Length: 75
Ligand SMILES: [Zn+2]
Image 1 (cartoon, protein in one colour):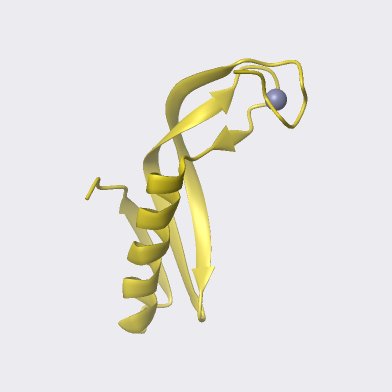
Image 2: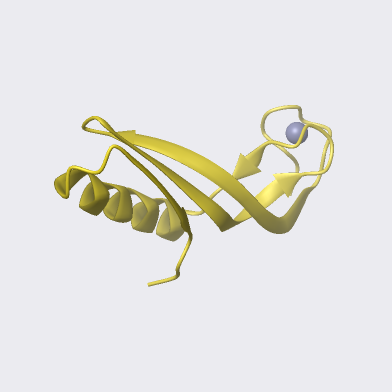
């Protein structure tokens, strides 16, 4: 699959870090499975991963934690 951002790179499977902000909480996930462009380095997450990230970030926000850094865990 070609990268939709730079249109030159190929997407390769890897892991990336992503930071989400939800209702005043900042949650950083490490080791998130992603497709990563070998040209520009942009990371893309599939729908399932994105949903899981948002759910986990919401849970952190509900606990009122301001900053949370965690390793991504598959549901
Ligand atoms: Zn790219």
